[in-house]
Image 1 (cartoon, rainbow, N blue to C red):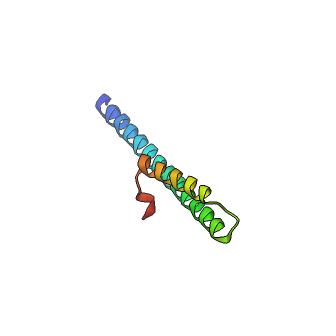
Image 2: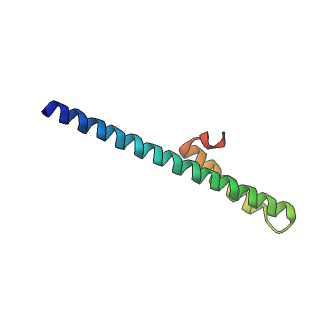
Amino acid sequence: MAGFLDRAKEQAQKGLAQGKEKVEEVQAQRAGNDLLRKLGAAYYAEQRGNGSPQQVQQAMAALEAHIAQNGDAFLK
């Protein structure tokens, strides 16, 4: 009986770890998508004449930092 409980506990811990990993992955994707949206808005504002190149560069730098930390899987 103890072996069964140990295996069940191990499986539960694996499931929790996988769930946590998936949540972190989804959060990173959402953050990446938000940064892409901000980059697009900054670029659009610059093209319309009411934005600045600095805003575009800041948005690009934030996006590049996110990609360096989390990868670029959210771009696909």
